Image 1: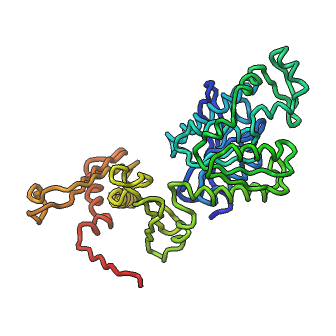
Image 2: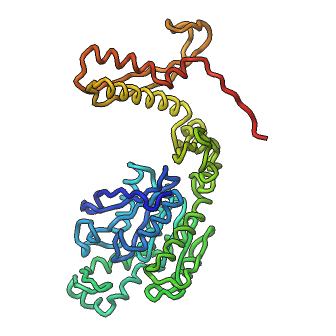
Image 3: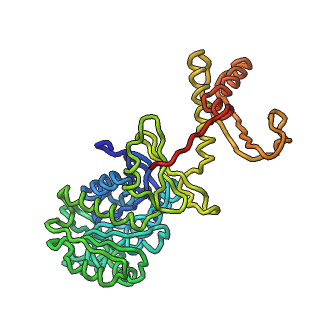
Length: 412
């Protein structure tokens, strides 16, 4: 894999309508799973721990979405208007955004107060298969100890500017009232999802006793990993990389995804060869390896698949469509034809041979591929006619319409 992973940046509306800034860190190939990361109380999506964990997960094929809560980093809105409940609502909304645009997150990760928020939000994200927390408090009101001497004044005035991590933040009484109402231990006891807890025994911000309470409250399967020597913010790169590696290895036991080991098995197919291997994640899911590219193949739910990738006939039609478009493009470039864009739509079906006038076979059923080609550009009738003739000459078309010998042999 490359040294740097691609990152997509975008915005989405938060729980109060303000636009929240987000980043989706992607692996080099197709993601085997998606993770949602919730950062600490006053941190942003670009805090070192979040960035490094996301980068580490990408190396294992896991795409990670991290974002700024309201009033933090590049997100709109006032921090003073946020509450623990609004953070939970934002997590649910960003999971919904992933669900609509990519795939719902199957891994939930939370750091510090983000860990508490992710535990509270887990039941509202049904596709989540497992949850990991890093330095999370067992009670969200734990964050108030950072400004405990100013709580009476906040309660009296309704709002006050306090210093957190050396920066000014406005805290409202509504935040204190809201956070006091949450009973996180009840959420943990009813989590019904595998839980992995990371905590440093020398964390002087959120003590190790918080991890103990979370672990005791959780039901199995649950795991604990001690981050010996790490600080609360995981400022040492090796600590964040370790967390990412452990999450990836642990989460694969619970995911309907292609395990990293399985994709690695087909990492170097012979030159010019395509290798297709079962992933073991479900009955029908396979991973296709072509050069450095990895693509999932699957079937729809109604025939026993997970619908995690295109089906075999989808790939067949895609190969013909791509070859058609590419062949027309090369011809148009060579002949200086002003073809702007080609769109090829294909459908496969089985029809009675007797209904096919152009077919030599007249008995039984035959395969039929309907191909519709849309051409954009200032083309005259002669150019369109020639391009349509060229479409039938694409190599894949010729292969499908000629005699094919498929030689199959078993590996001893």
